[in-house]
Amino acid sequence: MTDAEAPSDDAPTVSPWKKVALGGVVVLLAALLVVAFTPLFDDDLSGEPEAMLTYDEAVTAATALEARDGDDVAPECRSRVVDQGERTAKAVVLLHGFTNCPAQFEVIAEAYADQGVSVVVPRLPHHGLSDRLTDDLSELTPGELVELTGDAVDIAAGLGDEVTVVGLSAGGSLAAWAAANRDDVDEAVLIAPLVAPKVLPVPVVEPFARLARLGPDVHLWWDGDLKGDLATPPYAYPRYSLRSLGAVLAVGRAAHGDIGRDEPLDRLVVVTNENDGAVSNAAVGILASALVQVADAETIYVFPEDLGLGHDVVDPEGEDKDGLPESYAVLGDLLDLPDLVDRLDDREG
Image (tube, rainbow, N blue to C red; front, side, top):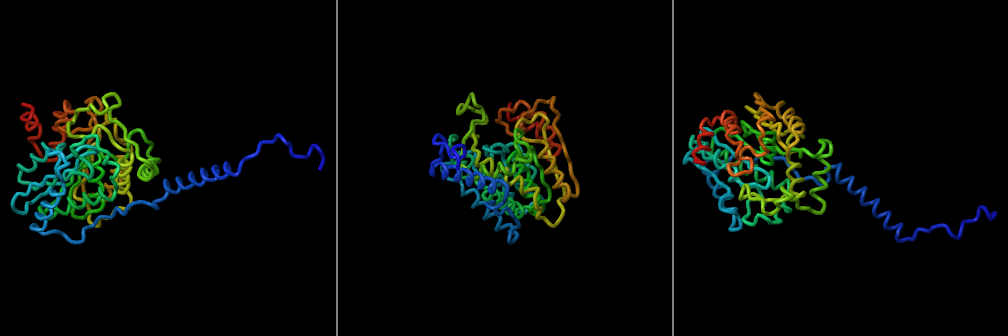
């Protein structure tokens, strides 16, 4: 070997430990890619009941649902079931939004109940606690969300001949899941379903959801200026966790994956809002296109941008409540609740 070919004494060397560290990083990145792009660790989100509940069994199940809420749950956020004392022609499940609670649907629930409809308003897991700064959302899983939704539909199907499921935001995604998987759901109303945040391109939602669920959790403020002082609605959490968001997105994705129902849905209603700053309307359109294939009838309604409505078009105590007269006028027609705006006026009066 000539001097020119001999290795230089000044050439940098890589220590064995650095090689190990570099190899570890490569393995970690490969593992993350596997997690992000394969369903290896996904929950089983199938959902047909083993057997339909009788009316009496549904009443017992309703009592058990309400009894799940302990002393740590805010009084206005407890699960609620309105049993009319006998099996009714219709039962409705109302599914609240992400970080909110059953109080969000108070006006709509009362309107249905006064029509003689059986009403089931479950509290989503880890939501509605008196401690609004709780870290409990970190425990939320897609399986829990699907199980809770299935339990609510079981009860409704025992209380009423026909079942309508109405959901807003995260609840809209759960309503979509129920419409896709439960033959005992006759009608589904999806209001701004949280199938994808507006800030995420649709193709990355699924890998993001997987990584968010399986990685270290991070809590983020809904309002970076007000933080924990965010006061509206007074029962909702002022922050959310990425892990819990991933759980919600996983259910939304499952809703337009393998559709499990055998019988057609009587009616599908999808409501979006051009001014919605939270939800990707493009992703909602993809979901709607999938569910329309199994629906006998569909109604698609879009709130125009010039109304200036926010994401939450339901909550009577929400930060967007000034726009509720406009949204309730539309929802009243879609839900066959003609006095919805009057009820809102009576509440404010």
